[in-house]
Length: 432
Image 1 (cartoon, rainbow, N blue to C red):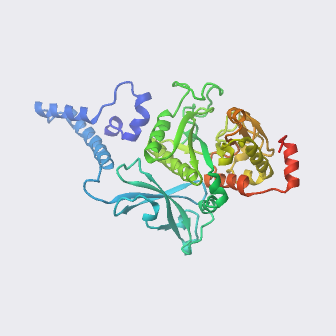
Image 2 (image 1 turned 45 degrees about the vertical axis):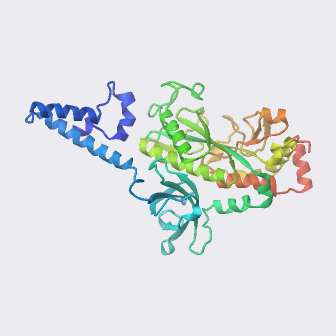
Image 3 (image 1 turned 120 degrees about the horizontal axis):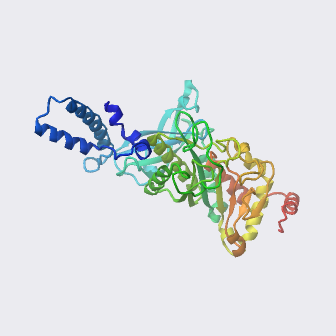
């Protein structure tokens, strides 16, 4: 009975709005009721037994919550650092905690650490140690205080980056003087889908059935159009608290699907911010008992997929005459289309079909204000003659380190042959 009437805080978060017509009974109400009964001397009552059981259950939860929210700052200089890294699949996140003797301001103040790479698919069992190098620090929205989240990349004990460490190569590209001088900006639109636990069906959908067709859900408002807003809003605030450069959020075209935007961010910061924002989203959905998926086509059929559109500009693109620089960048992107596609996320062929606001995966295209192209240029950019481009090809599960560094490499460092450039310009109707 105690478990039914006084569920845990996570379960209450999922059911109180829709399943309980009356206000939930709080711990304070139980305490007040118990005090009244004690004053009346009703110790023999069976009701009192039930109240004691409920109070005990709820008080246990409250004591845990009190400890979780405990600010240890007045009592110790020590902080908790949550070391976060990308696992063996290249899309999964792992983390573990350690105590640091005092608050830190820069990753260089943090010690390197290690983990069992054989348990994450990143090292053999007979030589399993993988070394974590701290690279970026964010405030911890879960523990608060001076505690931190630490984005790390991964190396062998000899100091060589392991194959899943894509940040190392990105850092090399972004440290190139030509790239540094162009100050590359990124604005990344991360789409994701929320699934019901156990059944792995989108949040808000009838189990084993479908909602009404797409149309009313994009940026929709209402109980029959929007599912998961609390998770989106909690994530928004947590990212702002952490210091992530999140710039907005909205409900997406498919019900149960959401998007948030990070940027503008300069260089490798864009990758660090996206990975940390994904970690925070995983933690929030974990607490809510909802499953997060970054699958680019979670539901087959006449439903939009999930992408990670990447807006990009360089200093030259943002200055007068920048539109010509943008067109040159588009030309280069067209010549390396297959190389980009192969690195833009697993399962992307299920999403890039030429339908649902996507271009066909096998054909490169560009256009002004055309969301059915590989690369879109905004009306304002065309009008002002400078600005940015949007690469619409990356899937929702793409590795941001790969995408942002590949964009910089292709548009700043890589030079095609004159013959290839001329053929591509003619094919794309670009006057160079």
